[in-house]
Amino acid sequence: MRPRWPLHDRAVPVVAWRVGILLLAVTAEIWNIKNMLESGERASEHFAYFTVQSNLLVIALMAWMLVVPQWRRPRWFDHVRGAITAYIVLTGLVYAVLLAKPDEVWAWTIEYTNAAQHRFIPWMVGLDWLLVPAAGRIRLSRAAWWMGYPVAYLAASWLRGALVDGWFPYPFLDPGEHGGWAGLVWPTGQVLIAFVVGIFIVAGLGRLRYRESGVQAASRASTASSTSSRPYANSSP
Image 1: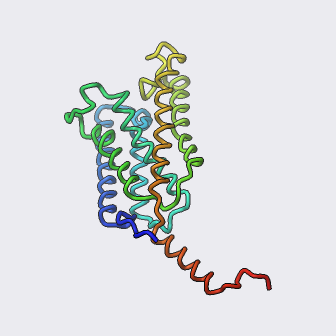
Image 2: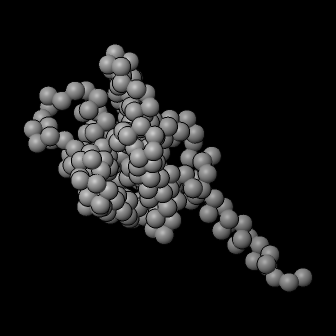
Image 3: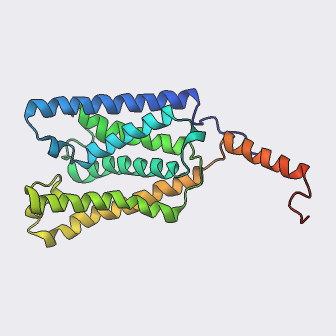
């Protein structure tokens, strides 16, 4: 049996790291809400940004992992963790490649919420996924379902902009910025391709980094011991 990986779910450095992510995400969003109230920005617009939604998902994920022990989580939890990891990491990448102004990409003069939600939190969550193995083996076929949320977000954004109030959260979703709906094929297609590739990279890393947890190992050992002590348990009477 392989020695247990030191960065497991209840290791002190891992817990401290996740507490740090949680505090950073919470304070950044509180700061965002403060700015929203002061500026008069509509809540329906603020919470419609994928950045905000993915950071809220990170808050829920970190709180869940800190409060609920691994053995009490459902079997599908690792897919939820992987999906949220992919969403937040891709949030950072799409911002850096498509949305940030050229002088913002490497600048340190950007505001706190921007830096926290587009830089620090994405790489911190990504590192957590890389260094703290999933409790279950990630199936790439099931990881394809991780695209459900981005596709639903895309459809909802277009329906809102086209039928409700004409507002689009990002330039690559706005037909007015690209000469009509046909002009969105390339910019939106780039983002969707990035999400497909990014999701399968995250899922693939999760599959490679999978290690049997202590709880699983003990359960497996107990089952094996019980079976070996009753060699005829499965034979016909």
